[in-house]
Length: 117
Image (cartoon, rainbow, N blue to C red):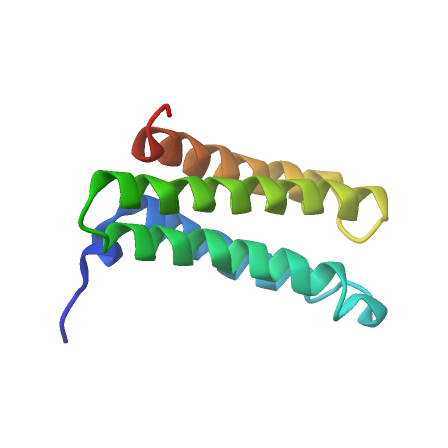
């Protein structure tokens, strides 16, 4: 089976792992939030990995950087939603702090990829 370029990117691998972890931790969110914050958090996590994959397939640096910026924006959206979920009592602060370490790692890698523009 063919391996695509994005699959070799450590930042994509980390984003993929983060997405799986996000799905795991949101399983315990209230059922009433299934179409609310639970869905938003999951979409933001998937968006990070998806934008990295899409960006890696673009031919120009400008196009690549655009998608890496989008991935970074989704990552910040995800962090915001996790913080709000803590405020609402859906997730423990310790769990968010563990996820923050993964977010920081991905954030640093995306900062390098997206350029300073």
